Amino acid sequence: MPALESIIRFSIIAATACLGLAVLFSIFGKRKEATISLMLFFCLSVVFFSIRAYLKEFFPFTDKVESFMTLSVLIAFCGMLYRDKVSNKEFTALLVLSFAATITTFVFTDRIRFPTAYLRTIWYPMHVPFSFAAYAYWFLAGINALFAIQAIKGSVDGVPDRPLITRLNRIGFIYFTLAMLFGSIWGYLAWGAYFMWDPKILWSVILWLYYGNLLHIDNLPKFRRWKIPLYVLGMVLIMITFVGTGFFSRSIHKF
Image (cartoon, rainbow, N blue to C red; front, side, top):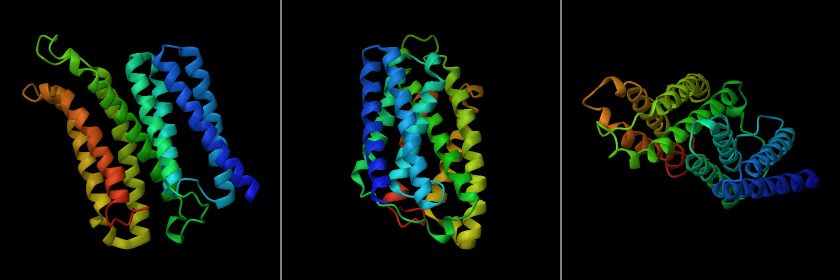
């Protein structure tokens, strides 16, 4: 349906433009204008996903474009939820990350394809959103930690008190645990035990253990000074898990 595909193209271009405006407004401290731009971005994203779901007759996150768009929306939405609990610089940085994910969608050739048989299970659409929601919360935790680095020298014990980081990690960890639970059921039904040695699975386990251990770092005085840099490093591990194994490995998760 050429007409619907044209609407999809328009919606993603317009959504990207609105998100870009939100970034600019946020940089200059225009809170109201940034909020309006973000609301337009979310509305256009709903149009984008709704039409793709209609054309595919399935949940719309089965290819590269949809994956990066889903990640972008969830990052921006997470930022909106915690907008009053982070600084404007942190919020803007998160929007820039969301904008980068949206821009990445234009790198790929966008074609509407029907999902393969092994994707057509309820476990797949339960797996992906939880996974990306975890990434969004962990990215916000990482950005919060990144902006805390400048405060380290001013702290008595060398580590600024950032309880929000731990709260964000806790929520992200819950989401990622659910994602791994649903994903393991889906993977076993689709490929059998072979999928457990997939690079994506191995890196996901590493990521899960990494953030799981970070939940306890506040209770370990000898390691507490590493809290901030470890959360910053976590963003790199997320990129390896999502982009590295999804695009540059022989993973069954490869797009």
